[in-house]
Image (cartoon, rainbow over all chains, first blue to last red; front, side):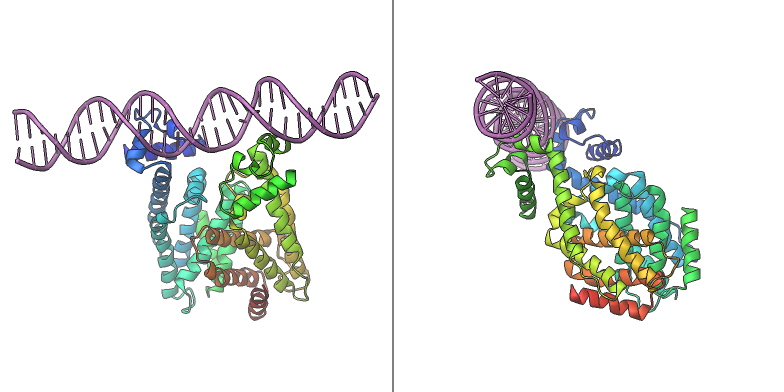
Length: 195
Length: 195
DNA sequence: GATTATGACATAGCAGCGCTATGTTATGGC
DNA sequence: GCCATAACATAGCGCTGCTATGTCATAATC
């Protein structure tokens, strides 16, 4: 029942239907109380929906294969992140909604650690400078990607402009971290072509 | 009356009070109808609040002095942008709220053009490569800044981590656009120290 | 095996929300 | 002087999330 409600909320979100208490339980056979017994209320439901969003994102990132090129893999994570967001824009907005509870942070941290690890690997394999702080670079990388994706999801930037902007920013951040410009650009473009 | 309601909404937003129709008009002497005669409803009020937010941002950016160093000025715009957001985080969130109407875009475009002009100047004065597309670089610059500021405003990133992350990203983007790394870093750090 | 405690469910109704229909009043043009 | 118009107030609608209360099935206890 719990999972059914969360999945229905995600479906309604994707269908751009307003997710209200009564509309949510309608069709499930349950009454409005189900939301309170399982989630304690609507904020609890939204928290569960965000967790679901991060779970789906984690699955996407886990599906990104590890190749011999760590920079390519790093960018491939970004591409998967962007595709995940654009495939379910309303869910992405819910994940980063202003009313989001910071208690949901662990779910986000797990996916972020995947990014930190990818940066650390690129550094350890010599593509990035040895002085690179994986956590700091991953944060810059993520924040830049989040900014671009947010603006696209919101309709401020056109979706077809995302790829060139994201590649430009990725190349800038990674070459600043010590990667060879030509090699970096090749890795980045290969990752976007594959995604 | 119009301006009074908008300013009161901004004040309530800053005070973290929920901005509801009845709470808004209470204390102004007006009734709930005032919101409908002046704004056509709550969405219209929010639109006006966002316009007010962009107006204040434009005033902040206009107050940034023009110096002999175009890269310094470019970063100074970013610093002013960040300070504006952190001084009124709820207003910033409202400006980029998911429910924001794209019809409010012109107000945002005006402030964005200020950034494009600053990039174009840096290019024209030889700090950035002649092939630099001011609009594209400004978009990357803005998206990265928006991503960082959004995460800080939301509490995901600590506020004291903003400066180093932002300087790192700015240096990466600007050196990738052709600026001399050492000179760029000096300009960036000077702008952050001044702001 | 009967009893009781517990959790999940349904029903009804609360206060609050944005909004609208209707009535009132003040201002400006003819 | 008359009236059109805009701005205001009042009352009430449908909806929201939520809670108080009642029902019922399951499981543990003696």
